[in-house]
Amino acid sequence: MKDCLMHLSDKLLLRKRAIIESIIDQLKNISQIEHSRHRSPTNFVVHLIAGLLAYSHQEKKPGLHLDERTLLAA
Image (tube, rainbow, N blue to C red):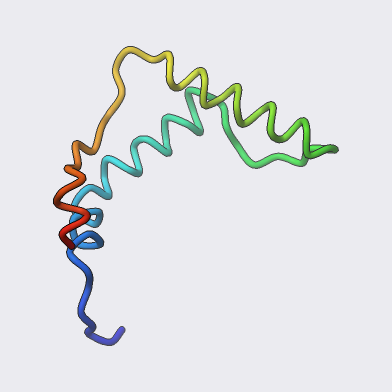
């Protein structure tokens, strides 16, 4: 892979990669959002929204704690 310059916002998100992966893992395992074959797009959207609602009602959620000013400055 070639060396190239990265934006500061990309570097900040790379530092938070472990937290992002743990959020995705929780969505897959706890909220049961997974790739499956839905017979209609409506079923897919309903399944996705139900999983996101279940995740939003969890008491303990990991967070990124990013400042908007830091991301906009990059």
